[in-house]
Every structure is written in C-alpha cells, then in structure tokens.
Length: 240
Image (cartoon, rainbow, N blue to C red; front, side):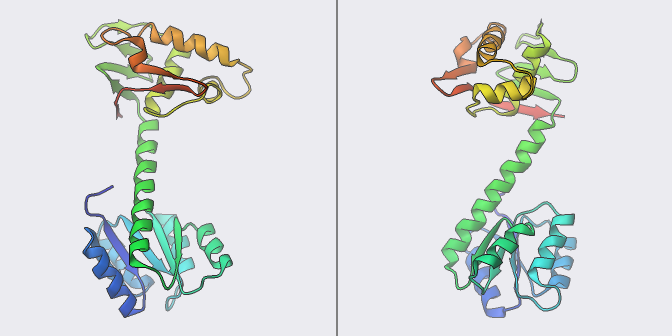
C-alpha cells in the first residue's frame, strides 16, 4: 500500500465531502474530490487514484451505475457510501463491484479503517497476480526459470529437477510464507482429477528438499507444519 494513497471522494453533499476530505488528509492520504460522475471521470483522467469513496445517491449517474462503469475500466478498490441502511442496498452495492459498503451516518474512524483494509486487499491481490505470472523466481540465492525448467544454485551451477519437482517448486515460489496443505499441493501440481495421494506429495517434497539444501538445512527452505502441510520459508523475488 502506498505510504500516502491518493483517494477520490465522489459525494455531492459538500459538508460530508469536506469532512471526509479533511479527516483523510489529516491521516496521511492525498485527497481529490468530485461532485458527480463527470467530475469523477475528469479526476481519473488527470491523476493516478488508489481508491474511490463513492456515494450511491448522486445527481445524474448514481453511484451504482458509476461503480459498474469503474469496474469495466479501472482496477482499483471502491468503498460505497449510502444514506440507506437497508441490507438490500449493501448487497446490490457489493454485487456491482464495490469492495466494501458503509451506511450513513458513519464514524470517520471506521471509514478510515475500512479504506485501509480495502487498500491492503487490493495491494495483495495485485502483488499475487504479478508473482503468479512471473517466469523467474529468486530465493535464498537460487534462481528458477519456470519456462525452461532451469534451476541454478547460489554458485551458478545447474541443478537437475524433474517436471513434477519443477511444478512443486513453482507452487512454493508463488506462495511463499503460506501454509499449503497436501491436497492443495496435489491440485496445484497434478490437478484435482489425478488421483494422487497425500503420501505422493510427501515423497515429492522430500526429493525437492534433497536438491535445494546447498548452504541451508533442508528444513530452512521447506518447513513441515504438523497436521497442516508445508511452508516455503525464504523471501521470493519474482521477475518477468
């Protein structure tokens, strides 16, 4: 998440818009304001926006229509506001693509907390998409090229791995620090319909461990979680 995210407030009520802008500005946010869809489009065209706070009741295009339009052209989090507290309004707002929904009147501190939450989720989502689309992974001095299947150790020597070991290492590199259950690893490396057993994953992990132990004990890179699965422990850098 940016240290100072740029937030666009789309709200036709001047008092509410100004209050929210002042509060967010005092809490390390850059803020732009718009009264309707036309002004929103102008700001989006001129500035890089990290999140939109969007009121439902607006002159011209309402917030639901604007949210649908945003989802077609922009990949950024949307927090919707409404004077209506009806559950159906919240559901409709989420269905058209809003990341969160807050009914008026609201506490500015809750608004800020929800805004930060959707910004964090958005950042994690973009990072995950980038890492899962990468070709090269670097971890603990090792380098993996998933397209050619070449694994290089920290000294520049090539280490031979099988196709199954490559898929397993790729799955680990794409999800560092996360506990991966054995059934997840089966699906990620062999497919749900393969019929492989969890024992086959244990054997595959053992084989992979034996090949990436050069300057670190095997357990340092792939840790076994009792009754849980496995965690790939090193920091991973993904490159195109």
